Amino acid sequence: MSGAGALNVNGANIMIDRIITGLALGAVLVSCFASPSAAQMRVELGATIGYYSPMGSFQPVSIYSVGLPRSPSSLSGTALGGELRLWLVPRLGVEIAASTTGSSVGGGSTPNGYHSSVPARVDAGTAQLLVRVTGDDNRTRVWFGAGAAAIRHGGDAYEIFGKPVNYGGVVGLGSAFRITGALNATLGLSTMIYNIDFRGSRFAPVEERGTQVDMMLRTGVSVRWP
Image 1 (cartoon, rainbow, N blue to C red):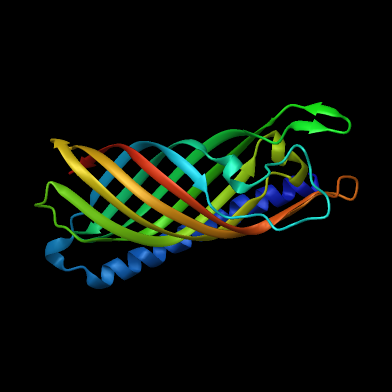
Image 2 (cartoon, one colour; image 1 turned 60 degrees about the vertical axis):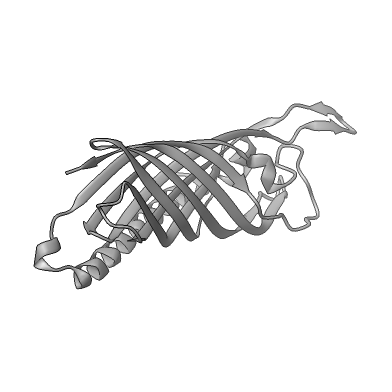
């Protein structure tokens, strides 16, 4: 296995371990507040569509590539994903969410001619501990959360870096509105904060560095049971 491939595998394993650890800690915390009368767990599973909008910036580098985004905002686009929430007690729970966003970056005229834009993709996964501020009796439920995020930059644009995975924190605000029965409409806003430091090989010494603040607005539908 190549060095880049090994890094990707190791990165994925680290991400899974961190998510499992975070959820385990969340479950322990929730159990501390649980009472025998609040032992029933509720599950919400949904599909989402939203908009991914990076708000950070890149640091100046010595060598730029026509195949990379000029700014983080170039990676903005429609985000498709899903979410799973487990309410272990009425007002405390955990959420796992994932999304993927495709875009075209770079391109333009250079001294060597015109270059077409290059496909890029950003995959994001988050694990949050949730605190709900409204009860089950409310038609609209509202919660806020915080936790860990894993962000993978891929597509042809990031092949030179080995499609790296970065880790950071996430804070979010969400709500669900009961449409009928177990069917709900959902709305959420989350912010992921992390740092990137991408470096190419000695044969292609391009770089991309900087602190990233990625906003994600999600809408969707979910099914809740029991």
